[in-house]
Length: 459
Image 1 (cartoon, rainbow, N blue to C red):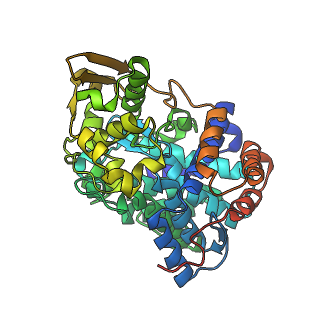
Image 2 (image 1 turned 90 degrees about the vertical axis):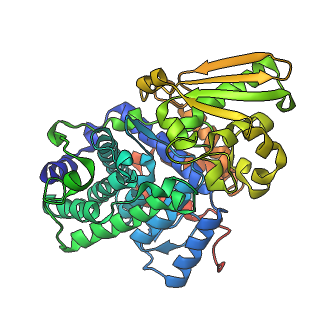
């Protein structure tokens, strides 16, 4: 399988991308960079910036907010920015969920290093999307106790190899090294959540980018990483097949964007409760109880199922993965955006009391319709006995109701407003819209002009 995957990467062509895939990639780059700019004040991001400034790195790839460092370190820092808010895109497979524009930081750093055009950035990113999403389809690892960053290691190596235009042998070695070395535990996202929830993929980006550059120098990796003795299939995933010769580059069009700043499986429930509040006019103080019927994956991850109870909420990481908190703060504030995760907001009695009134239930029929739908049934019982109900099957941003360029632009503007003026904002948006006609450095030069409040600070 390794040789087939490497051949797929080497053979991938920009001309093979459909117009829909090209546009979807641009929308997701815009979305990812908006998330990144909006995360510049994140505490873990500040710590990483301090470490990079302390340790240094050859100035070859741009960090968002200014300064350059080695490509693998740029992948770490920019990846942490993209991921911190937990507001970037997702891909839903039956047994796995991933966030494929986590790959942007690595492909961007490698493309800039290689002095490539924007079309090659789009192509490398499309390759990474395809590899990660298809491995999530056929080789899910969550139920075995491993994190989705495990498949991401293969995707980063594939995307970076394409960005660097590596040959078949070096691409295979990059994928083999990354896939062997970066098998991560799911404990990252269970129980008491830590900063590592948002840094696990950036670390994978850093390490797999580093591994790919080692392969570029000639370092070899285990050729039987998939089917071999103690390889990925035998040790983790079980047997699976993908005929890479028959794969296209269109999986990006099945990925989804978040309308609300919360874990992806919560999106329909948030939209349902906000629409219900608007339609009926109920007030938070009128709520006696709320019951939410949800599909099994959502219940297990954010509803109190197998990955831990979700009513003890103290940190940002716990809050954005707690459906009771998310719905409570949505009802109280009328929105779910980054400010809903400030320490002061999380600690307030109003949200802490309301979330205790929310109960989440899994429904078998909802589970059977996932991932083609994201069903949720919200039932709000008011003091006095009145019951108001709303059911949703998708939301604005789901692949059945995709987010337009205009809506993605609005999201980007809202997230970036505190860091960039309107002139720079419009230049970044315009550059992304015509990325295939530019060099990658044309975009990264603009990203370097953003004010990063973490520059020059020590932790």
